[in-house]
Length: 53
Image (tube, rainbow, N blue to C red; front, side):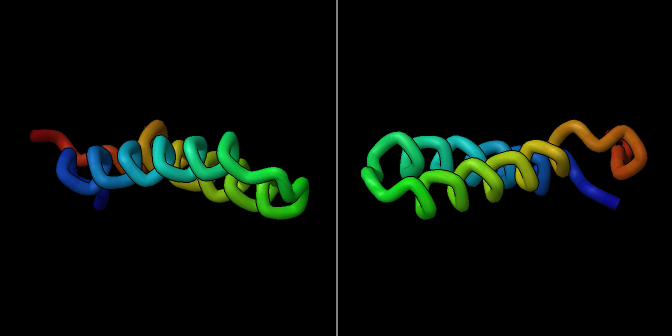
């Protein structure tokens, strides 16, 4: 199960990936950063992985 601490980590990582996507001029790198951000955000908002605190 994903803990609240895990969820905060994934959210920070998603934010970092979005920052890196905005900073690059390489379209392939930008796309990769957005894809990673989406994967991290899926972990943040995955209702099936929620652990009650």
